Length: 542
Image 1 (cartoon, rainbow, N blue to C red):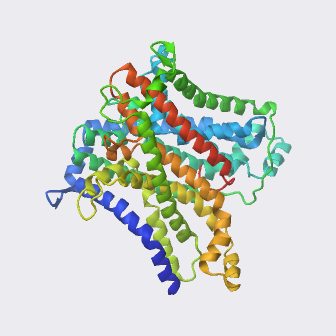
Image 2 (tube, rainbow, N blue to C red):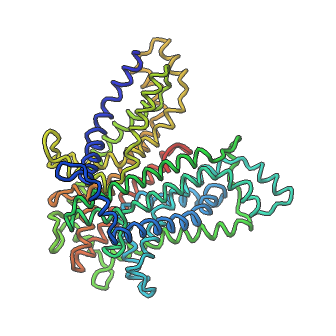
Image 3 (cartoon, rainbow, N blue to C red):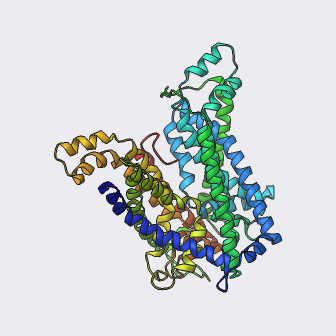
């Protein structure tokens, strides 16, 4: 009974945090979509879902995400094999390079592909079509497949494949009958996450699609900010919440049904053979897709009035001409760093408590049920997009007793909720892997609970905790979905300022946006490279 009471007391802080800053905003959004004039009126939400434009938005969301997911798998699986099973010079650097796009702010990815297809690839006449959107989605999500599938692939026992090859099976048959079934769990997991990220893409689609090509995410934003149709936006939020929940449940069932290899060991990488050339070629295509837009963005930022110049960078301490944002790029960067710092310590505090709660061993059926219920509750933010969260903040946290509308902590809180699942995903597996007998032995020797945590848990979790801090900081630094609803005109974050500069006419503003995007990308990439050095192989994250 004491353990259950202690568990409830430990869970009080994260439960209260999620109750106020997640359940309340989502409930307010649900109420706005289903309640009209104080009465339950789901018919109005159904009317919104019956609009022809909503049908087009929904269809584009589904087919674009499905196509981007398929292409990401086709390029990412061979790249995972090359980077995790083959040995060649520069492999570590390339593995880190493949991870950088995943933490690049979506506005940076959007402006990079906008500049690429409107400039170097303008002769293809693809600017303004779905092609840049899908290419940007693939660019952004390749890291998910490479990390998820590659980590699983490098630990596969090679002996079954070697035995099949010795019996005369060709390379493709060995892959189809031996390797692919063994990788099914990781491939299903990666495909689900990629489809989820593509279907909820916001900054990329908003910049590259405009009004013509909209996903549910961008349509919610446009209905809220351009048309002020809050009930319609709430109805789309409900639809998205329902679809994402179904997708997460289907992914859980698929992973549970997927066969898991009985024996796994690290076979070590081997040198490239002639039979590996198709995979190497596909990995090369993926590398070009990653490198070309970034290089084009950097070169574009160094051009001013048709000449090579640093003028765009020298203008970063100025306010854009005619811009709606009353801050310079330097000021916005400082705001972003401060906000990301606050979001990081919040995500670590809540995520650390959640990780401890869900990984401790239960000693009674009651404790087990309480822990399982808390685990499910803490995972609820996975089913809600950042745009939906920001919209919920906007309509619910502006009146007493929870009036946070003018609080400087509102944006950090929203960003902390976005980063929270990744923090838990990084820390929980490490805590779960600690043998509880070590804690019991420390307690039997007279160690207090606090000393036990400091000497056993903290010693094991130090590097993953630093890695989780880097992940949370990088994600918060580039977060745009929720922040676009909540950021003030006089106190913008850098992603919001870049988007405002892109939407303001003038070559001066466009050049500043390119330079600001490079600065933001370099900052997040530096954080990501540091995280890669701190990462514990095979533990958490993507």
